[in-house]
Image (cartoon, rainbow, N blue to C red):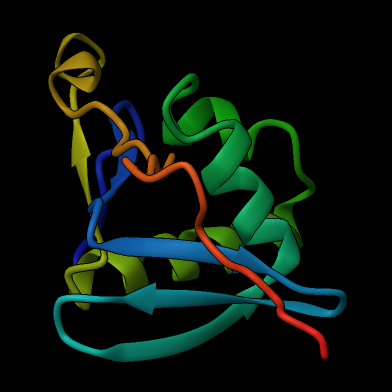
Length: 114
């Protein structure tokens, strides 16, 4: 467990996607075919804050007890190669993958009822 540079920004690898559930979220690593359950709050931080704010700025929004938990999750993500830290200037070098699907056919599915 290494100390992380809190002035850097957390980026999740694009082969890792988050699926938010009702009580907890799922981190899916498509490349390694691995699943990890995480808290919904961590999912929200990754989706809404990680590319916009440094780790230090994110932690400032939470009390000390939660800061420790968030830091543990960030360390877990980095140690297990689900994410990495980068400088603010480098964030734009890692664009999010488009999850939009376009089908070239006019009809994608059909139900025929007799």
